[in-house]
Length: 321
Image 1 (cartoon, helix red, strand yellow):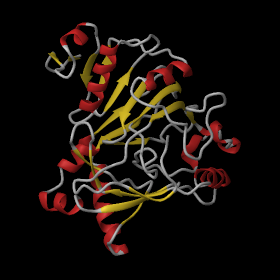
Image 2 (cartoon, rainbow, N blue to C red):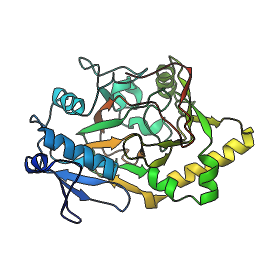
Image 3 (tube, rainbow, N blue to C red):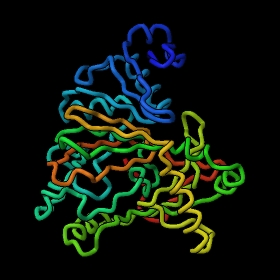
């Protein structure tokens, strides 16, 4: 794999594998994000290309592919080169004919009365990591742009490794030993019937899991913050007021713009992010600009482990695979 910033060869791949791959990764921000070129995802990937893409994902946390004209079947096949592709979602319906694909967009949830406004009218817009309420949150997510408004609708990604590293040592020492409960709650505008309908689907089966507040990445060994305002309920063992204060401090750290990158979508753009070390936010700033529609698949992950050796524990629900 070629890293454009220093033109060096990735040492994790063998010389033979590197010779068989023209994958290049161009960093696009200081802590996170790279655009990957030199590969056509509509074609069968070589082992070398898969190895280089995985190396780029681990290094940059989220990688972007441009001008990829692929089908739903090809998107699923691409995901399977990196692990088991899960069902679309633990509780939300899948795209018809494709049980692995979650369609993101108002039409997908039957919200006919707000088609022109998209999800901006009833879902709270927060940083989050996908499906952390299950025992084994996804390794990664692959999102494909289908309909993209001419302006707005960017997606932000933030490095939870950089967010952790940016804490002072006394705070690192504190959060390294904390655990928090994640549950499948969806924060919506309570006065909007479409929002209430979507929330009812989202919470139709309860999932509650106690995770470490900091997880150790199983492949890189990096420590990453593992909380998000969408699904984290409380920190175990703290008073309510203490839990809220600590979580708000950590949420502010996650949202620090220094650790983020923003993707401007175009049809055929694909984002592949490491769900173990990132959070993301879909900006609802495209109201009136037209529809925004994407297809997402997720790759089965492992059970998080904290710096203290604590392994996530199921309270209710279970694994996602």
